[in-house]
Length: 233
Image: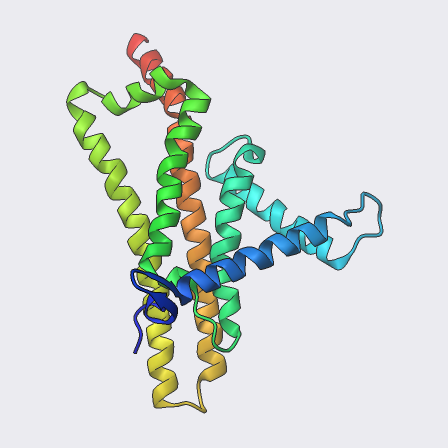
């Protein structure tokens, strides 16, 4: 049994190889790009709207609401980044209903890449919101002694994001594969739906965690000021 789509090699020449993770990642990106271009090219502001535009507006509204509930007051700023992550992970789960499709999120390389994007986005949004000096100062709170521990915390948080998504997606695929091997005619539809549900939940959790981390980085200044006000009171 394969633990990862990395094991499926379509082409290899020496060190270079094209595996299922790469192929299906590009398939998802192509489908999402083509779909967004097709829908947004026919947007309507009137009462008559296409079914796809209604679905797209529902998805965008739901993502914006979740970003706002995570503590980010201006969800439009973070929507392109967090929305793209959610759609990619969710599409990886949805496409598993297609025969032969292997979700790229079942590869540690993909989940690590997504976690690194979050790792880079958190300080970028934090610096944009607070400025370089104020953001870097948050790493020395409550005292300068905490600097190495805060840095370690940032790195371990990124590793946890990658391993969490990879472990859940990989274990879900393994369980479905084992049960389908044991009872090939009894559980296929049920287990496929279960895997689909698991993938959607993981897409939601990964996106919300990223939003919470960004919210913590962008609101540190507010918390710092609140603590200063409490201390001076």
